Structures are given as structure tokens and as C-alpha cells.
Length: 588
Figure 1 (spheres, rainbow, N blue to C red):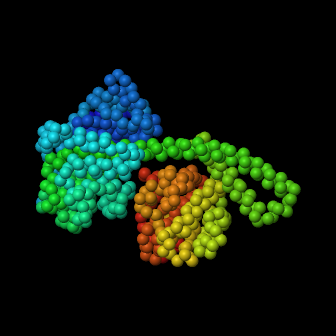
Figure 2 (figure 1 turned 135 degrees about the vertical axis):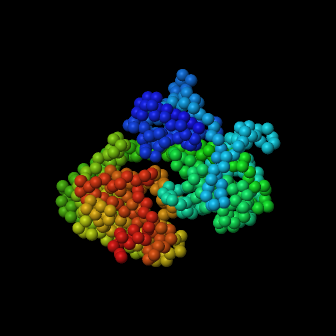
């Protein structure tokens, strides 16, 4: 149990006493302690109870957190994000001070299946020394778990490598285990945990030597769903208690324990382990209690790795920003000189202004000037400055299609890729023309390159496929927004990449590139008051082949209301690919 109280600032006098393993603070409504303080981030920090200890973690907040302990003050920010706290310590976030009034180890509660099919809590009555006493040896299991992790020199920014080490450490603490699995829960999961949201192919697992080669299942989706709904540990101590599902019976499980992993007050994954019939003793209630504690510790390790990766990304983004700033600044002078030289050529040879190639060069130069100027402004002001006006969409799309074909397709490829401008010539949007061109160029370029690489050579090389760009009124707000959609048949985007799309340094391409194009595109669309929607499928859906639809939801006028805010992601992920593509292409 942890008891905290607000002693200064917004919400003074409010206190929370809870047995929850994690207590989050911030301005977001989902936080355990919601603070009305503008200096506090939406998800600012969290208290994590691990056994009888409590750790405070700053969740990469904008202004950081301060810890007052023993007459000293410590700053917790991106580099030092967590600290073990004690009774009487104070956490200062913004103008709010929170005091830790009491910390007490939770009495264990374990969940298992009852005769009526419902989960019920059973208390595990263990003495404190029994919870951590080794069945022989002298050191505690929890200490041994920490020792095993300390012995492995793994990349602190790699969540996946941390998962591998955790699975191995758990297998060492529980020698009777057959399989240990660390399972990520992807964002967007609704009422039921399905294979789509646990990334079955990406599950990190440990298999004991005795069970190797048996082909048993690594985990049970049925049990994951139980843990997801109860938000507590599930314990099945005998074969008779296990649910009668294919994943359990097919896996020949004799006992099973599964616990949730937490990040920022939400379930981010699961730790699942089970024994096999005839291979080791089934798990006892004491194993369940110990596993519950180790799962909380594992959450800490995984959160540290995720935070370290995020900090590493932030540093890389900052370094990239400085490099881009220098490049943009230097290129500005060159582009300005090039523009003056072109103006001089036009004065001496006016007839060149009618030349089509000369016009293309001038348009390319103008786009480069915009990209360079916008990069500098965004780095200096964090927003940049867009010149918004009502423009016709069809000619802009036509120009981008032509440019992308010239830039990214050689002569042989142009006969194999069809890029069609199917935009309605009457549709208009209130945008910055150069900003829209930059976004569309990135989208069409991604589709072109994906078409050339898709199917790993199985597609007839005489025909890579087709890209179509459509425009239509937004079905949700037809009077205020227009959609410009790039539709391709390039194999679709995997679920794992979709969940990360829009973050810096995430790319859909097999060859490693910077992965900043879509990040910048989404940022520009947001600044123009719009939104991006994506529907993708790696399997044929109805009459449509595998592919992706990327829609720019753009305001028609400056008075258009803002789109609904998106939780977690910078874009809307559309679930029904076939229905959405049918709507975009105007088919019944």
C-alpha cells in the first residue's frame, strides 16, 4: 500500500491511499492523481510499489521532477529518471508538492479459475521471510534475480534484449518451468486480446532443455485475456484448474502463472510461464507470489529500457536537428545565390522563361527554398510559419506525381508503375502549398519505392503495380474537410511498424534510412490544422490486394473545427482496410 498527499499547490489536501502497484500523476484524466497545474505534463510521473519498496519515476516530463529527501533536493529528469523513496519524502512537480505519508508491502492476492468459470481472488498467506527464502542455498530468489540481471551486460536501450535477459533470469529462479514468454501488448487493443495485438511472431520466450523440440505453445491467449480484464495475476496450480482451450490442451500445460506488465498506469504486456505434464512439478501458490513480485520488478527494468531508448532517440533527434539547421542555413545562401543567377539569366535571355525544363527547375528551387526555410524556422520557434491559402488540389497532385516519377523512377521502371491522379478538379483545401507538396512527395515516394520492393520478386517484373491519388469530402465532416488519399498495392505495412509510424527514425523500408520523412509529414499536416489517417493490410481484403491507403484530412476553410485529438499516436489507424479503401475510391 502507498499513501500520498498533496501538501502544496493545486489540489492541496487531496490524498490517495491505494494498493495499486503503480500510482500515476499528471494532468491527463487517466492518471491516478490528476493535477490542475499547467507546469505539470499530462503523464508526469509515477510511484511504483515493488514489495516493501517504492520507486518514483519521472516519465520524461517537460519540466522534470524534484525529490526532497533527508534535507537534500534532487532533480529527476531525462538522464536520472527514477529514485527509491521513503516515508516523509516529497516529490515536487510544477507548483505542486506531494508527500509520501506511508509505504507498506501489499498482501498478496492471486487469481485463478473457479468452478463457475469466473476469476476469484485467493489470498496467499506467506510470512515475509518465506516469500524470499530460497528452497536451499541462503540467498533470496529476488536477490538472485537481480544478480543474474547484473551479470549480463546488455544494451540498456534495447527493450527486446532486456526481455531476453528477463526470461532467462525467470527460468533460473523457477527451474521447473518449461516455457517463459514476455509478450508485448500493442496499442489499440479493445475489449479482447487477439493475436493481432500481441505480435505473435515477435514474442520473446525461453524454452527449457527438457521441453525443447516438443512443439508446445508458448502462451495461452485465453489466459492473457483473463489477466487483461482482471488486471491481476492469474494462477492455475493444477491441470484440472486450467481452462479447457486449444492453446492450453495443445500445449500440454500442467500449471501456469501469468502477470501483467505495466507502463504509465496501463498494461503494456504480459509475463507468462507454464510447466508441462511429466516435466517438473507444477507451480505452487508460493511460486505465484514470488512471480508477482518479480513481474513488478521486470516492469521496472523494461520501463527503464523503454525510457533509455526514448532518451537516446531524443538525443539523436536533437543532434539531427542541429545538423539539419546547419545544412539548411548553409543551403539558404546557396539557394539565394542560385535564384539571383537565374533571375540574371532571364533578364538577358527572356525567351528561356517559356522553356518547360527551365520552369521545372524554378519550381524545384522554390520547393527547396521552402524546405530549407521551414527547417530553420521550426528549429528556432518550434513551430515554423506556414502561409495558408485556398488552393486547388488536382494541379498540385499532378505536379508531385510528375516530380516523383522523374526523381525516383528510371526509364525502365516508368513503364511498370502506373501513377494516376484521380482527384476531383473542383476540390480545394486551405493549406500551405509548399508544405502540402512536401507531404505529398513523401507519401507518393514511399509508395513508389515500396512497389519496387514488394513481394520479394514474386510479382511479374513487367508490372510493379499501381498508385492512385483520390480526393473526396470527409465522411465525418463533409462541410469542413477534404481527403487527399494515396492508395497503393505495395504489400501493406506490418502491425509492428504501424504502431511506431510517425516516430522519428522509424522507417518502413528494409534498407535503413533516417526514418524522418513521415515524422515531418505528420508534423506539417498537424500545423495546417489537419490529420493523417492510415489503413493498411498485409493480406488481400475482398477485391483489394495487399496495400496501404494514406489520407491527408485537410481543412477546406480557415474556420474548420479541429479534428478529434488522437490518443498516443499522431495519426488515426483505420481498422477496416477494405471498407475504407472502397469509400475512398467511391465504390459501392
